[in-house]
Amino acid sequence: MNILILTGKFGMGHWSASQSLRQQLLHSFPGASAEVLDLPAYAMPNLSEAMYKCFNLVVTHGTHLFNTYYKLTALGHPDARPPMEDLFLDKLTQLLQARQPDAVIATHPLCAQLMSRLKGESGLDLPLITCVTDVTSHPEWINQNTDCYLVPSHEVRRALAEKGVDPALVCVTGIPVREEFRTLPRRPAGRGKKRELLIMGGGLGLLPRDLSFYQALDSIPNTHVTIITGRNQKLFRRLQGRWPSIQVVGYTDRVWDYMARADLIVTKPGGITLFETIFAQVPILTWPPALQQERSNARWLARAGIGWVASQENCAQEIREILLDSQRLSGAAAQMGRLREQLEVESLNALMAVIAQNKEAAV
Image 1 (cartoon, rainbow, N blue to C red):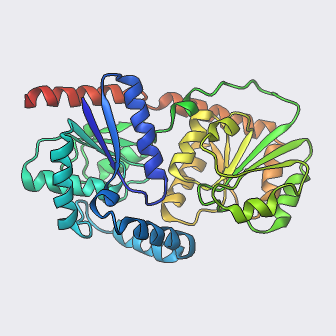
Image 2 (image 1 turned 120 degrees about the vertical axis):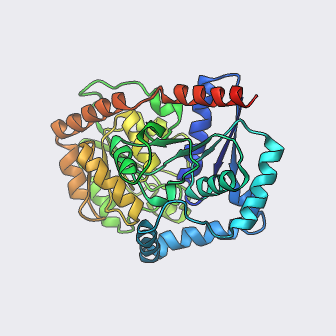
Image 3 (image 1 turned 180 degrees about the vertical axis):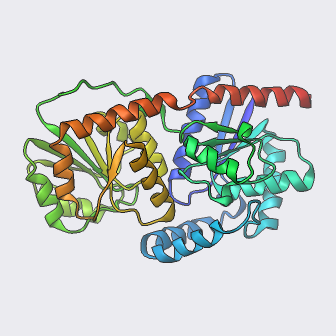
């Protein structure tokens, strides 16, 4: 069985979800093959890098522009026509002819839109699964030729149904995370002599610049702090070695090792990170969200009782209060455990059964 996972590097969350989904599929079905492909890079190899750089600039320095676009498109209809559709469709047709997949999984709205459009125009009988990577029901994810939706929560499932999606097509799976987060050892209450605080800034290392924030963290009693600065080398050099209780780490592809030791994680409310913390069962405090998707994620995590949203970027006092309140921490961790159990972790098996059935019918 040959699965093609289409994505785009508009932020690394979509790519990360794709790799995690591939890992899960290969783990559950050793005889299957699964390939992750960056569709914009495949279709426009000479332009995609510049396009991704522009996207990063907009979300970092032009948040208001991005949010305005997101709000306007939220008022639109499903089955939106993506930009440069004809070019993408030609390349996508060539790709499918070359790879001959048994099913396509899209982890970015652009890929889902293009696959749906191609199926509608060509009559292609190929299962399309859309994996939604934020806690949102934004219309850009909804396309009429989709055979199955993998969504983060029951709230998203209900919201999609209100927008006309057949609930029978929707599986609540959470957002795919690597197996390492799913298999972290459970830590007993009262573990360790010191509390462990983990601060993460994502791949770009988007963290507070004010040194007083880090000075306040260093003063939290009986606490060790790990700060992951990602690819932000300037911040890494600025923070490294300044405070005795703070360890600074640059880019790492083994975040789970640090998460396994943490009592509390402070980071942006990205969809992937949010579900990594859920499966690791480590409570999360997020900085005030800037992007619309992050705002949806933050509202959901607060309602779900698995974490908190800080009132300001310099939230050292809030961090201190939560870390010193073991009941708040244990309550959020327990709720994460209940939520983890509710997720339909076996739905990938059902999904693959549907793909196999469609393949046999095609034969």
